[in-house]
Figure 1 (cartoon, rainbow, N blue to C red):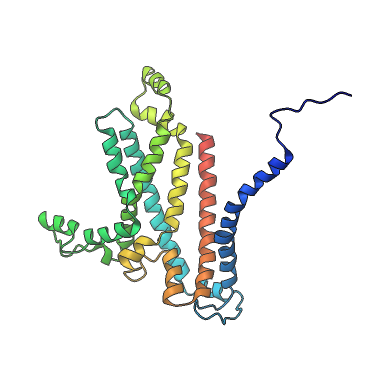
Figure 2 (figure 1 turned 90 degrees about the vertical axis):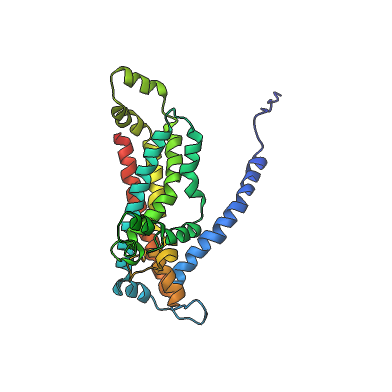
Length: 302
């Protein structure tokens, strides 16, 4: 009888099965704090729940119909898209530009990187309050500079002008967020092989040509990550419109998330707010998937 030698590297099936038990804590957390609230959101969206009284009735899709017909969805979607577009474009352009500048051999490189990332360390509430005073008419920092230069500092009130208030709070998010995109771009740029750049310089390529033909194609996945993260962050914007303008003036800075908050806690219509949240969730998923598709397609072309 021939005895088979047991392979030392062969693990027991019992041990392999036990490894799945390590998934239980994370899976439980995921089910309790993500799946269950999501299912509850869908359930409340078809009721007239007001958030306080649990004696509510099933109303079907009436909440969805009211959300579409009262005009708040279209206005908040428009504001959210404009806000996201401004923050995505500017935070990525500024972050990429600063990352390229700080990826060169300059003195105090670490100090400048720290300074550029510093605004990202503040919470949204702190940043909102700080910039509310910066934008303040008459006595605010910008208004004081305008008056010092001979302009009308008292008339400077971007948060009170419905035409530019949305852009003003979007710039605050750009100031707070470009440091994060810079760090990610910097990590991507440091993976570019210096020998490729040196070969390009020997062939007579300018720095712009090296950037366009070598650096940008090689950091295409990094660009995709930054753009997608910026899009998601812009589409779920709430903090600045709540802290700095409270959705005003008028409805000019009411984003999707702010409208959900107002419907739920100001109007006390939790059922309708849930329907609003479901539509906002679907909208964010749709935009993110479309962006991811085009960004991945762009990576392949590069």
